[in-house]
Image (tube, rainbow over all chains, first blue to last red; front, top):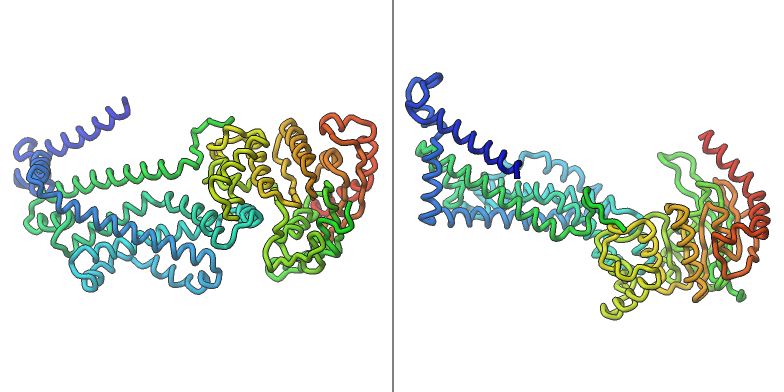
Length: 265
Length: 272
């Protein structure tokens, strides 16, 4: 609990410093020429919180949060399914992986955020252009993990299942898939984060709803407090998503040993 | 022993392609080996002599470059899949880490399409037989090495294979656990007398368990160079039988045949 107290203390300190340095007239100017310039560029914490409280009390934020969440979830699920399917396919077929290798490498090294404007043209300004961006980001994380995971399945495990009478289909279902899933879960935190990035960046580049849209709007009117409010909401939201993933992971991966576990008999 | 052996390896040669176009490596050359029905045969040999290669050929996991594998008189074609009448216990851990104990034991029944409830019932019975009753809901990582080996044994035996192939199954265990497991294996084997091909580098283990011990030459080009009948009385207790004069005489005799090969293998490894 001392840890928690320290963590809260750091947060309080940060907000205090933010407040002290941005409150017009409180601290003599040492950089800006005018009193309200710091507040103009960095916002003021009490005003930022005011915006957040207003968003939640009026319920205005929920529609935007829902859209961003939906885009994140869709991007994550579709990207993961594609990554899993193509990862399994390429890992199990040596010819296919040899043929596809340069393309996979090429797509992976391309900065995929530049695809966002193209997706906006292809899929419009609704949620699908954001989902598409999220998919391209998530796909590679999951793909590489599955590919690696399947390639590194212990040959003994495969031989054992074959001796026990597993058909190729059963081998896929009971050896390759579970083994790949453990790698997918290892990359889950990363993948969810990237789906989130895809959604927000997509919204930022052109949309009519979503938290990224709120930020874009506020920026257009130099409303820094609202920009910061959006950033804060996004951060908290990302933390919540991450915790949710952690919970799912703990649930599904009970079979994996944890470092501290001393439950052997 | 009946006329048709349970497992017959005839004139088996296994050649592996060399790395990066190097010279091919002949692991096993013109090896002939027979295991009669209900017979417990151990194969001993120096390290790296191709013992596991021979076992993989018998299992149908590896196609030999030349030679014929027959299972109860029927020719085994590796292209048509593995040896369906054999169970294989591997040296390394082969349990599925994402399945609990009971789920691992019934894996083979699952693959065969046995209804869940029935598989479960048989699985519980086998867990009891290998002394793991009550541990069925644990994952492999929550078990000790000895427990995992027992689980693997149950996983193999639940399929009621006619032939049991074992690749140094107890080599990773400590001496005490190992002798316990050897006795348990003998007790289980005494129940229904499967044909067993047991690979080991431990001559004492081989003599204590087997009806016959086959000595392999050092690699490359491994082949059997000695075949010794072990006529010690059964049932045996592996830790006690080691002290008997008959055991020691056999040990001396077989070691005499094995020693040169072990030294040869050692010299070769040092030179490499």
